Amino acid sequence: MIFLILKQQITGKMSHLGCLTINYDTIEQPLLLIQGICANLGLEMGTNLHLAINCAAHELMDYSKGKYEVMMGTYKNAAEMVDLYVELINKFPSIIALIDPFRKEDSEQWDSTYNALGSKCYIIAGTASKSISKLLEDGNIGILRCSGLIVKHTNQTTMSDLVEMTNLIDSKKHIAVFGSAEGESSDDSLVDLAVGLGVRFIKLGGLSRGERVTKYNRLFTIEEELVQNGTLGFSEEHTFFYLNEEAEKAAMAGELPEPPEPIFATEVVEQSAKT
Image (tube, rainbow, N blue to C red):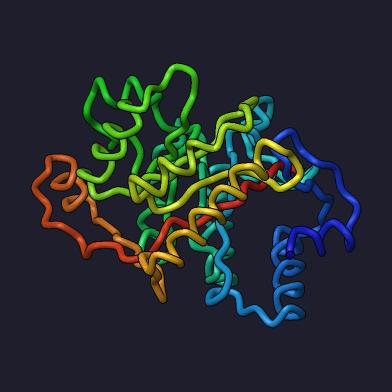
């Protein structure tokens, strides 16, 4: 419903991921727009709806300037980006995840952002993380300080790889986010895998491409089946399992006590795109 209203109210192009791309004057403007639509629909941000921002920092980097272009003509260095994210989360506590807030090269800023926001939202590594095969080979996901990783099902990834990768992430006290790959088909098995393995989120992209909509429809079908069977899980709030540096080292070594068992069902993370 929110997506349909956005399409009616604003003019924008559709990205190859099915996302609506718009021009804006401030970083906050798109969030305020969504906030206003939710208010008109009687939805409360942070209660009925939570947001995740796909920062896609690797796409924002202007290598000639060595800075991130957060808006057309507006550039910020890595340290300034940390301040931007902190300010944004403080203004909009309904944002519960930042995906790829930096390139993997900016490891110091990953640390700073995780230290500042790890107890308030999930810091997720997607493009910034290693490939699944490399992660499984090393048996270590602690390259960047983050709350979890995006796991994509590509042609080079087997079902066994996905199961093993999910178990590895869980064992390191991080969360797994299943994500759609670019240029994929309408196969919706990724949704069944995500629900079956109990991953925290699934990242499917926008609602303007058939191969993406197919997966949303499958997710809704599974939800209906779980409701009918009385097995659908719920959670009233998100729990951010922040680890300080010592605790994170212990987690990577498998020495940290288990966190509270999650009780909420897989959720959907819509993918944003650079304007």
